[in-house]
Every structure is written in C-alpha cells, then in structure tokens.
Image 1 (cartoon, rainbow, N blue to C red):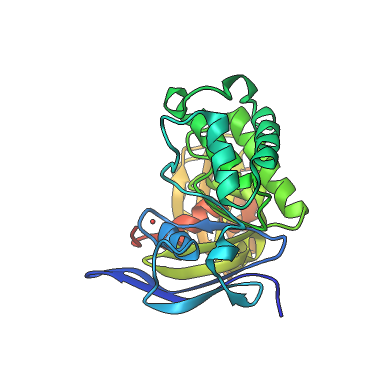
Image 2 (cartoon, rainbow, N blue to C red):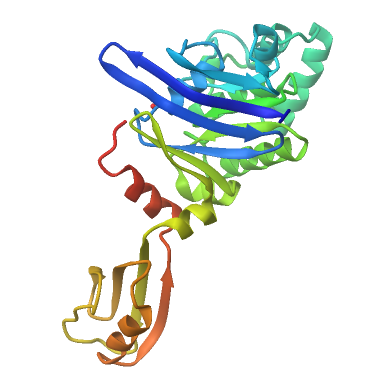
Length: 301
C-alpha cells in the first residue's frame, strides 16, 4: 500500500459556492508538492479538509492507506494561512503548549521549543508575547509550532507570506530538510519563482478543480505554447512574425507566442531577414506564465 497523503475526488459546496469540484492529488512519502492556484481556487479548503476543519460533501482523504483519524492528525504539522497563535501567550510557551497537544511531555516539548527558537533566530524573543512580534517573526513561531512534534506530514498554507528574503531562505532550507528526512509536504504559495526553486512537482487548481499536475518540467513541456525570444544586433523597423502573435517588441527585441508545433526554423529565418540576431531562444512558458495560462478566467482559496 502506497505511503503518503492521498486525496480522491473531493467535493465541497458552501451554499451556492462550489469550493471543491473533484479535487484529487497525492503527496508520496518524502515528496514536496507545490499546491498552486489563485485566491478562491480551493487550496485552503482542501488543506482544511485534511485537518478535519472542513467536512467534504464527497470524496476521501487517507494517510498511508488509512482514513485520517484525530490520532493521525496529531502527527501532522499544520501551518494555516491565517495565523492560529494565541496573541497573549509568549513565543516559547506557545510552542511548548502545541507540542504537548501533539503528545509530547512538557520537558521534551520545552527542549524542542528551545531548539526551534534558536534555529529560527528567535532565541532572544522566546519570552516575548506573540502580539509583540513582527508579522515575519510570528510566521516563524507558527512554523516552530508546526514542527515541534516532528510530524510525518506537513500541510503549509502560504508559509512564505510576510517573510523577508533571509527568513524565506531559512524556511526553504527547513522544508527541504523535512522531506529529506522522509516527511511528506504539501505547501501553497503565490511566489511562483520560489516554488520553482524549492520543488520540482506541482498541482495547479482553479475554480475548485485540478487543471494540471506533475513535474514542473513536464507541465511546461506539455504546454501548447512556445515563446520565441529574439534580440537583434541593431534596431529594426516595425516587424511582424511569420507565425504566432507578437507579445513584446521594442525595436531591438521581440517575444513571439507560437504554437508548440509551429515551424520554428521558418520563424527564425524570417526574423533573420529583418537583421543580424544577437540572441535567440525558444522555450515553453515559465511556471508563472504557465500558471497564468492555465488559470486565466478562473477564480478564486
């Protein structure tokens, strides 16, 4: 039986709003999956369903081939998009408290809390009230809360929101370490460049449905679009591509959107007739461009 998180055909409606319309995805053991989609696409609803905070109308969710019980959920590390911290509790006390809720004794929870506070550069703020911390530091405390009990599965909803570049890099390192140690990680993010640097696999949702899933390279290569980028050695007169549509042109460089099966050689030869070329590339869309193409017109997590 495959180990990991398995979500099958999840449906959820809130009144007249269809939040989930057959969402299915798998996070194998030790895998790191980026969960992408515009606001309102169903990401947060899916994550809350895993945590038992939302009851699906239909579909199933399993962990290591079995239903997710409350005992299993205590072994999950959950980081909600909206902070779930007690504002008037001190940072260290907060981490210890949640560690105990997950089954640690107070001594062990305290030891681990100290380790995470140091790792997240919060050692000098251990006794600060959460409400006294900056938004970024609150995000670090929330990460420590989700990790203190050494979870087998991490559900992270926008973990990089509000973090400065240094803190974001620390977060990225920690998430990567967890997967290397065998944890399964499902995380959402609107920072698509960061997603590309962190993981090779993604699930993209729009309007409550999965519109694409797989490795990012595979998703890009399956796109029906290619982008031909040209830079001439000298400025050229107004120029029209042989095929496709001109999305950018400044007299010296151009970007042409073409069908993947278009005759690229003919298009390049046509560009050469306008003048000598200094630089040339033809590639599938980047993740951010692919994301925009897939969810264009889709709505909102």
